[in-house]
Length: 370
Ligand code: 5GP
Image (cartoon, rainbow, N blue to C red; front, side, top):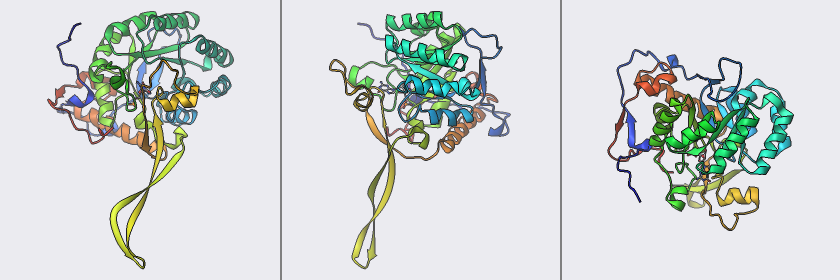
């Protein structure tokens, strides 16, 4: 047994120090980024252009409707794994550039997963550009082998691979053929891995260390999970993330397709009516949101939990929030504002412009009641 002594940080443990800046207004901040990927073979000079915020491949988030709505605003979506081959082929074959450039097919690493991907790819051809190979634990040899196999067979696909939290495994995945490594074990809003297994890594430090490793090899990373407010998103970019992936912050919207659940609560006020004093009742709307390895997800997609597995996710009700557009405007407004405080005219420069200050105590975000 060994103990690492240097302290590792979560988003809530730091703030970004404001700096003198020549930026006039948030409007002047450029959020769009351009990337050239490490292993993807393509003749085009630029491989990606967009606002590097991603919807997670979770039920209620990574849906076709979400993908189209976010793509229209320049954002990215990793689709849920549970669409069948016909649905996926239909979606990508449509041929819209926004789907090719802003949406990833998500897959696990079983033989059936590989066969399904092959079948869809055959029917979609180059309209399918991104594949997100997503497992809870990216440290297995089988996972790296799967990435190698996929890279050999598909040089013209951008491969996203995860999840890991350390520099050496980020490097290993890049050398196996991944273009973008997904970083985060345990920080998710409906994840219980830290409780169930004791495994994890404080997310801000994971992002800093993995970004450093990836950038050294000309690769890119996604900070996946743990963002509870626009400020956390900005901290992830400031820590070196090329993309930030969101689950809970994008849940509860029309595009997620979940059933709206109505609950009635006493407001605490009473009013006199002709029947006497009556409690005032207010109606609130919610949508169910659950982790993809929760009991709820396993029941929905696999007919229950396998007996040797325990659930590493939970189910919660999140407030219903209508259309996604307003939420995205709020998010982007927050990140733009961070850039003006830090003196970064482009999101690209935010990391270089950032000095984090440790708060010394857990910073109580108003959104931290998850
Ligand atoms: P959030 O943005 O909600 O904090 O985190 C989203 C991320 O949580 C997802 O992209 C995924 O990496 C992770 N996640 C989703 N479902 C589960 C789950 O059931 N268990 C665990 N451990 N992580 C999950």
